[in-house]
Image 1: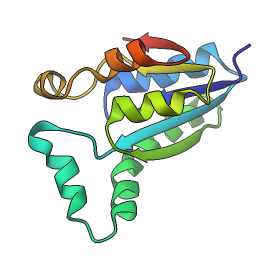
Image 2 (image 1 turned 180 degrees about the vertical axis):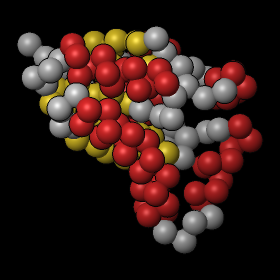
Image 3 (image 1 turned 120 degrees about the vertical axis):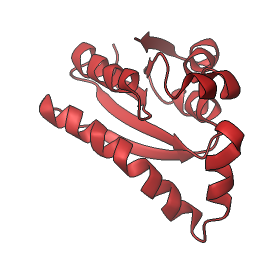
Length: 139
């Protein structure tokens, strides 16, 4: 029985579909949406800019808020409640490490631009390959 589901989200439509899928397939489970801030991006822009912030924790929370607000909107529209969390670091690594505390991870198949996927690597593939629990990839 699935009681805890982790849904990593970024700004992509596939991440939103992953949350919708998790809410539909696991309606009685505790769903946690996580957004990872500060991972590698084209030319290390996001990670480098975080290093320059006077209050890194506050900057990470600010950058995650639009994504988590959208996740709350999606859940609310379905009459569901979710938990949210913010992590800092490399997305695939942080998601895989966090996944051990859950029964299932539901992740969108891709996010970001084609250049970012080629430069950074495919987070969904890394999560799917390295996840210690069942991982579902949603298109």
